Length: 118
Image (cartoon, rainbow, N blue to C red; front, side):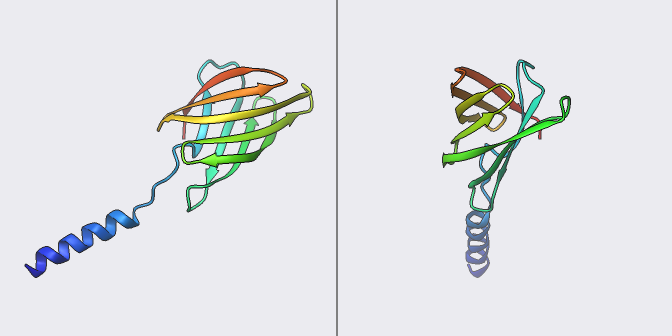
């Protein structure tokens, strides 16, 4: 009986201590290859998104998005792209562990789908 209680206690402890990482974390590539930018989303130990960067190795450019609001499976950010004179707000929505949708509103209105590559 003592062994059973010990095993149950260990299982409960391991379940409650397991990290649950936001589905938004990772490196994302758009599915239609309309841009060379990758979106990199980092998450802290509390499942809060800490940064959203967009990097293009082909054009050697990057830009950072300012996070306005977030929850576990979505975030809302804003950014300005000087060379295109775009000021936009994006809502990034986790569809599943490997798929994300970005709805962009502002200087341009478009929806982009992404697949997680890392």
